[in-house]
Structures are given as C-alpha cells and as structure tokens.
Length: 88
Image 1 (cartoon, rainbow, N blue to C red):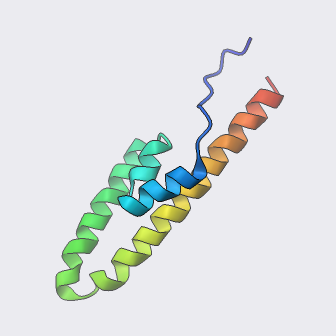
Image 2: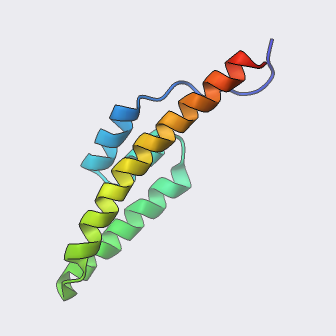
Image 3: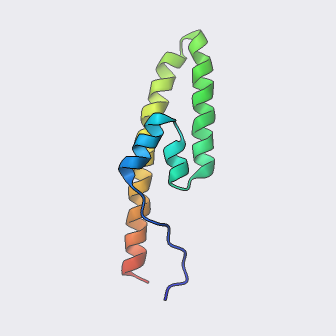
C-alpha cells in the first residue's frame, strides 16, 4: 500500500473547456486554486484595460493561455499519477 496522496485523474479537455468558459476555472478544476484565482484577477484587470484599448490585446492572449495551461497541467497531473502508480 502506498502512503502518498494521489490526485484523481483529470480530464484535460474538460479543464480546457472550463478555462474557455471562465479564465482560471480550469486551473481550479486541476487543484491549482491560487493560480486559478490569479488568472481570474488578471482577466478582470484585462477587462478594465479594454477602456484604454490595450485590453483588447491582453484579454484574448490571457484567455488562450489559460486554456492551454489548464490542458497541459491536467496532462501533467495524469502523467505524474501514472508514474506514481508504476513506481510505488
């Protein structure tokens, strides 16, 4: 029996879709609460920056980055879990 705490497998597609719906939500789904909240705060600031036009550039960049990051982190969590299962 292993004493380490394994995270449940994450659905990388769901993580990306959640981040597409609300930036940072995919990170929270992956268990990265602080990172998800930071992404949400950054997107709020980007929304405010739309009043001075730079937000029209930064908002979609952050949105896309959030989706890609959520997907990749879910894949990494699953990869780490498979390594821990193979080598208890």
